Amino acid sequence: MRIYRQLVACYPHLSKIKPDNMVRKLLFLPIFLISVVSSAQLISIEKFLSDSSMFHGSASICIIDASNGEVIADYSAGKSLSQASVMKLITTSASLELLGPDYTFNTILGYTGRIKKSTKTLKGNLIIKGGGDPALGSERFNEHYEHFIEKWVEEVSKLGIRRIKGRVVTDDSYYDYKPVPPNWSWEDIGNYYGAGVYGLSIYDNTLKIHLRTGDTGSIPLIIGMEPSGSGFEYLNYLLASGSSDQGFVYSAPYSNNGWISGTIPVNTEDFALPASINNPPLLAARILSEKLHSAGIKVKNGPSSIRALPQLKPHSIKVITRTISPPLSEIIEVLNHISFNLYAEHLIKELGKVYKGEGSTRAGTEVVIEFLDSIGIETSGMFIEDGSGLSPQDAINSRELASLLLYMKNDSEHFQEFFNSLPEAGKEGTLKNVFKDPLFDSRLRAKSGTLTRVKSYAGYFTTISGKEMIFSIIVNNFTGPSSKIVSQIEEIIKEVILTR
Image 1: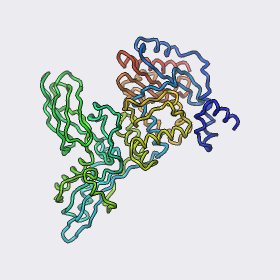
Image 2: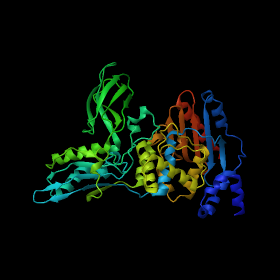
Image 3: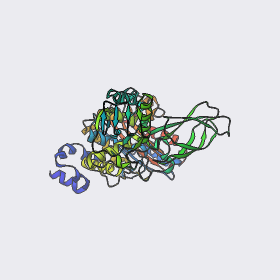
């Protein structure tokens, strides 16, 4: 205890560790915190920092030995920088620790009023009650959710209902009605990667705008949208040009229209431009209404949501069926492999809902900070505004991120699920086209982060001698191509793999 008091005197943030965690934390945290870099700076880091691409740039670099926390390399490791999608490591680790890998989400189909069997009529509303499932209907979980809406219709039919006097209503009040964090960029939120979070999300909140293009300079023709029934209209300012997708979608949550601009490839029969669905709860109600009609079940009034018609919010409903999500571990594996912003933002709101009784980004980020404090992470220099890292106001540092990865490796019961969620170098997910040198093969798993003038990586690797390492490298405001920065980061990791 005397040693602990001395450490707290030098490192005040250690006082945040709960008493029942003291002994466990002291086994590795002090080693990491008081390690002195006795070895010379890595040659590859010196070369990287002296490169012209870093003349105006900043970097935060930390590499530690996973077995004992010994610092292998440290350059401005305490400097807070924009980290992009590496933020997802914080969100997913907190979610695994606080919710557990087997945690699931529930979507309920039920009804209000009563069923009159003699006339096969529901005198009330059919209710889709959202429960925060981030993956409902996702093509990434096709087998799990296969024909789930058709199954809902079958369950309604089994009750003998042929007419509904009311309407199909989505109860989307599980989370707040602020789908995107307030400081996200306007140019992001209309695109699929900036899709908002709703009490009921569906089909990854992604709308595919199908277009046919002609020669250079021609205006592409919108030939359809998937899923259909969104009721959304776009002004088309797109042009056909080149062979890459430079198309952007501009729209806002709960709106009915927007516009598309930029360029998409020439001479394509069917090009899909992914956009965000701006009102998933209403879309879900519309789709179910259409499926009921196709099955011969008549619905008197048009579909809606509780947000639009709050007077319809039921105090209780009679449950017809439940759709349960895949376990959290599987959702997180998809999230980190493809760096899926929507799932990360769902988890932030779910943490707020479970631990603060408020399904908001603000409440969720508070829970994450409290979690980090509880395991001894210094949070004074960590600025967390969302769960995905898309916010330009996010900033963390490599030292505390490495400390979190060390905690997950040595102290978490759920490390294997966390580790499995990270893509393997040169093979899958966001690392498929990087770290492709054979030296990295089966040696490195990491999360990447990319924004304009931001490149970051953090994760685990094993050296030639068999030592397990943890690394966190964040680079901001570099000049020149990002591929050059990636190559230099690869050289840093190679040097450690070969020399340690």
